[in-house]
Image 1 (spheres, helix red, strand yellow):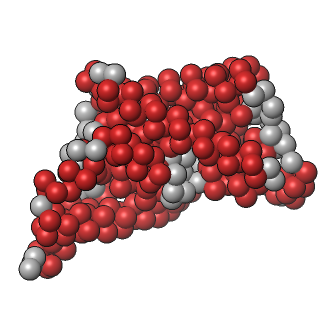
Image 2 (spheres, rainbow, N blue to C red):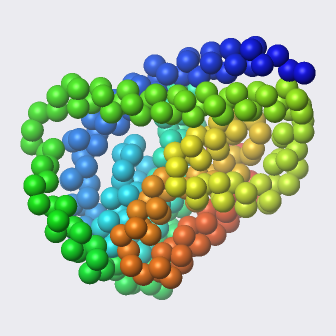
Length: 294
């Protein structure tokens, strides 16, 4: 039987050493969201045919709620399907904070972000070639009118320290708990089944691994990207498998889309499109030799 107390201690140490880096990363992210949030959304609204470019570029920036905001813009008829898809594919959710906290090579991080942005941009343009319709529902317009009343924009006012520290601490602690739980489960499985068994579940079935990772990525929760990134860093999945999961993952974006957009079939089509593109791109990265460049 494995020593549970030792596994808990090892998991706690692994998670605690990441906490300072997580907090600093989220503090920077909160500051950027305060300074860029409304400007970013305004730029996307006015982007026209170049929407997928801006959507993909802004999507890689660490703004926690950007994919959710993009869903709102789409439901409000302000951006195209291609722009929305570009945002969903390029958004990295918790990948960036995890990689930074694990002190991954900065060159690798930048290449990963560039690849996600390129895939999102390319897919967005292709989608818009065939589907030029913008979103827009009466339900969302009515809801937007209500939420716009009394809304206070953060642009133009000083950002107070607690505006940054409090949410950064909360977010860092939430991810810390996810990592702690994941580390405990992973360490327990490794102790009981062995690393070779766990690695074989994914690495020996590469295409199946891409399909499974894509399904995990669709889970509208930051835990999905945490688990996928951690498994990659632990060596239990290839870069392409990780990218399949992270490309298909859009944080809360899809969840918000189903909430605010009345066209259910359209929502299901967008979900399927993001999943297929994410899995296909991941397979091509692994089998096309592109992963070796990263």
